[in-house]
Length: 464
Image (cartoon, rainbow, N blue to C red):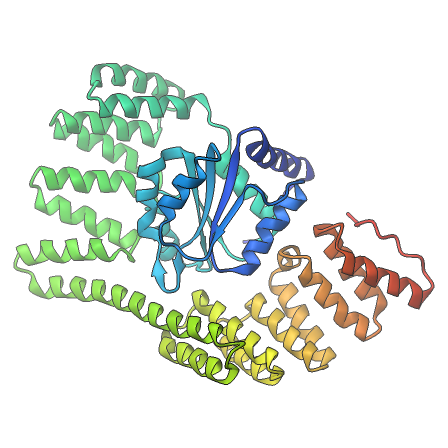
């Protein structure tokens, strides 16, 4: 599917929404990530809309996120929390519901992930996130994602929140007419059907609760909330057959939830179906084992990074152990480890070793633009300029938006062309860097050099 083009007038609206959020609505950004490229992208987006980093908080670890959000809310009215689905091999996804329970809509959760598989995205989506970003992402698309997550609360949403409070207070007679009014506005509203189901369930009217939860489930195949409501309903009603049926249905849509697999195994055990039970228990253990292996690999890599300046050889040895421990389980989510290893090799002058590492990763994940770009940088270090350009071209062909992720990317590509005295190409990439950051002094300086070399006076204003 080709990337969606954002019209200029739409982009202006998104910029204004994010600007208003930070300025008029006392909003803030909280990044929980160790991805420096993503941090640069967020900072680039803030510069792009005219802000400094005062309203930006950052941590590289996911511990105490709730406490840190609470502290941040003492200074700001609301937060957009950008949080990795996984840090150092540990999944953060199970924390999302706790964050929402603690802060409600004051904290918008945008989950960051390099994984594009439907099962991974489904697992994230069932855990109360407001949005998902599959990295990498350009500055323009990041601003659009933020705008969608913080879009102004409309009257429908406000009314839904009020109805939830009435239901929590057992004021069902007040809540029901309000739901009916909303259904006149949106007859097939999934959330309204869920709310009606919640009221009937609270009244122990399981028949009507079942009916409305099933109506809610028709809205979206990936919306697991009504399915979970149905499963909980059948569990409370001691309807073991239907409870298992809906657990299996949710597992089919989102198969990475190990806790649900244990519940499925438990039901099969109660039915005396031990073979089926063992399968789900083993699947659950497999998911947890993979998480444990991720943590082991990440720990090796963390040690390797810390040793990079102290004892480079030993640091590289730990990094190699990290990749060896992944073995055949290496995936897109592990690319950061290859990139760290390549960086370490390049720092030691072993650009060819870095090329080899990137090439091995490309056998597993073909046409990955970040790998092609990093390989180009390694060739650049080795003064293999033609090979560098070929890798850069592959990176841009695979993902044109890579040029918008950071001004350094087009700048570095332009520098290779400058070394080759291909001035028109160097000029083009320097201007691409200035489109992202009009005050990028290094790009402006290079345009001056190109002007001196060619005798053509450079227009240093960014080109649209």
